[in-house]
Length: 120
Image (cartoon, rainbow, N blue to C red; front, side, top):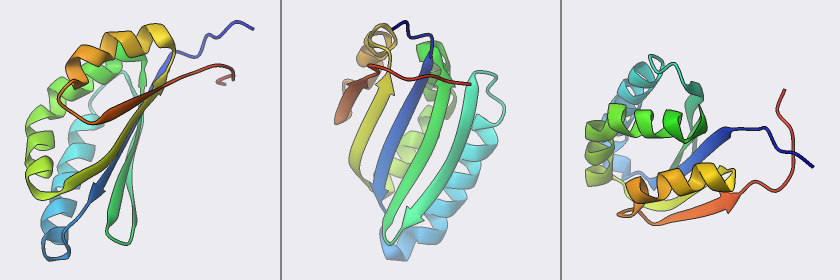
């Protein structure tokens, strides 16, 4: 089976302190505003369950994910000062994941290699 799905998906989960939820949601708005300007960003948004905030994000290959990290680096540092990053997953083709590893070495990331599937 040939895989031509170049999408790289990133799934961070943050524990939000209740007393700082409003501040975090303002940061989320800034993340969304900046990400909406990225041509290689396929989708981007936040979901929440209790105290856990999740960012759903997908990019056209590692190039899109790396451009995003460059674009929101300052905001990422801010949210990491407030919230605990409880989990971080990156999903994609092995070659694309290899391009991302050096940029994510300081984070507790787990890489998932795409084995089969399709994209419309």
